[in-house]
Image (cartoon, rainbow over all chains, first blue to last red; front, side, top):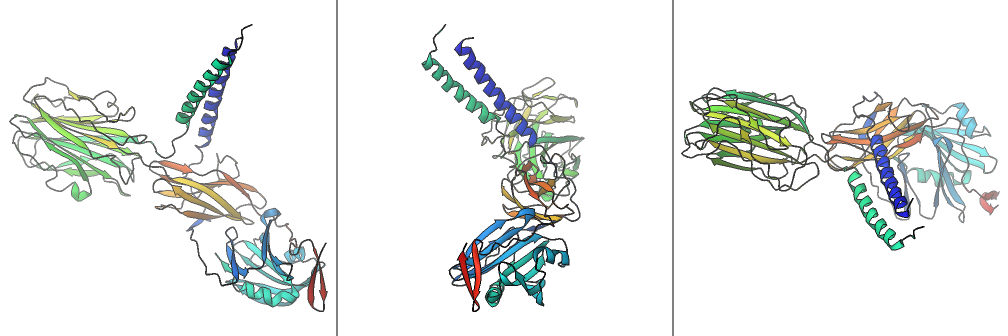
Length: 187
Length: 388
């Protein structure tokens, strides 16, 4: 077979392959009919962007996935850690000033935190000075606990929109963290 | 063995790659413009023009375009206002042509063409003005189309004209903006005295599909026809002559109009992300372009191609390019779901890409990420951090 024939055969193959790719990608586009009835549980809301005025010396942390925003001192470094099972951890810390707290968000279907869940995330089982708290309308509990690495910790746990939020800091930073949490807003 | 001519091969490759690119260009889906489709047509005639005539319309849906063409055959020498009674304008129809052969011809013809985008309660009939003249024929035809741009259904101003000495309408050429998927519609009417109410039009090449016409006889006979061209439309488009059966005469007349239909712009949808809970999720998307959506939402399910879906949320109309979300529940824990946004209008449906999310797992434990990599000590109530 001459080189010219091989070349033409190659181009033909390329053209046919292109047609094939197009054909099958077009077929893929023809799926779901939008008229399938929605389940009763499906709801919609037009998405609006709420802008907040950030105080001097502060920054805004905004999480569109879990629908919340808060202000934090600008010297804190923010890190995000996607966890297994759709959970998520955000840390706000300044190592030099020994300040920081973390937010752990996990999908949660109960309206109140179960004992099993407490035991799961608080292996020490310690919960003292338990009191009710409200974070932008979400009710929860504040308490002290202990952690093998951190010693005594301050915990504020609350449930909102199918998620459990666990906010943790070292006990000496209780007042500092709770002032920050005053700026918490659900989006 | 023949030697390879590298230069020739390179030249050939260059030519073929150009051809291939051109081929691929035409194969790529044109997402912006949708296809117009024919819905149905109806027609009616009347013995004389003494009274108004009721024209039953095709069964249509919201956003369908209805075009009505009607004609009066007479010998009065009057330039009729075709909607003098205001029955069409009062019902929300827009005039696109009102033309008259007002000459010494014994068989004059007046043509009126009107359109309307149907609302949620489409019209089932309209009243045609009979012009109150005796010994006149009134004929009307109607065609409905789907997938036309509801904001600017006519691509350009309709062209219309009229003539004498023949009963063969010659719809005028039209310069449209050549949008992808443009259709042209022609309406032609004839004033004659063939004394036959069965005369029919032969439409120009490309205009025969689903064309409709109607004739009526009285002292002055009239015929009307309307057809459309759905492919091969040139710019400018010169439709050609509509030939009426029967013997032509210099004593006859005609009037005609040409319309270019602009296809609806399909809305484009973008699938953004989902934030999944334990047994629910909030799906986020954006209508990112195209025409207004009459419906939008998400399809979701466990099939990665979404060939079958659990459900499709229907969130209603969306008249701006903006983001939206749906909260869906009843999901199972620790399952991968697939979803995509859509937005639809009478021109078609735009889909976002398929994305996935995994519902939560109750066994996920908290990890302490705070001060990760540091050892924490307390000295007289002061926190001391040491890098590990």
